[in-house]
Length: 298
Image (cartoon, rainbow, N blue to C red; front, side, top):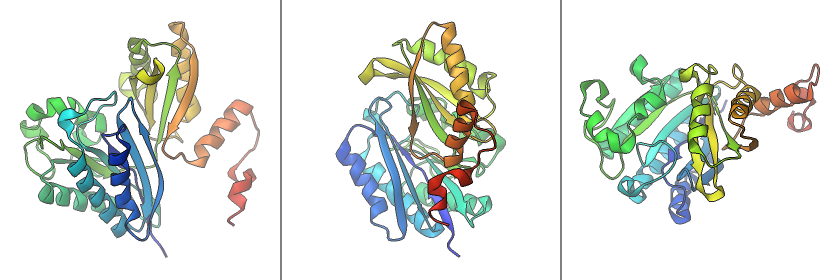
């Protein structure tokens, strides 16, 4: 029985195609690891890679990606709209088939130790792999970002789980952990006022009193001269995509701003989209078995 783990590393480079392709090539080199998707955003200056395979092979691919990113990305030169603290910013492992959360936590720890020891990059464990409750939330760890971490890392409470208690000047620091599948979902607004996007994000995200499983931040999309509410839905079953969409629309109306579109970053579970179809189309008694493509592989 084949065990399958998904890995979705985020890199602080979304503009230089050659660098992005060189990093992604590290996945293509490992037999038995399937590259599912990769996408880049110039305004965020960030790339997200998704791959799948057996646990040991996925772990090897993840290390190779981190090593290549450390070689090619210089955080001293990085500017982008998305919060970040390292060349390889975050590396989540997600149990997919016949793999437990505990097994993915062990992968996270092994990889973290190797990255800290061999690459001299400070590593923090998060979500289900977190070493203490204060480190479960990625936003709490990343607060201060690359620039602020040179002082933050010196504090006893922010000693890395692995690697030196000193910021890697070129590569920054990396967060590694284990989580359930999430939906990275952005809602675009018909304004160029990032203050409005931030105000809406504060209302929508859980930490601001909003939706329980939503993290959100306002982002300027310079290329289109608009702004967006960039969200991570960390449990799309308990806080569906449509709930986040509707709350952003409701808050946007207060500012007289229209919602002009949305986007999914990376891959999205089919159930998340089916839930949206059921909600907006008011389809009664609809389930996954009625989706044509779901029946093709039975």
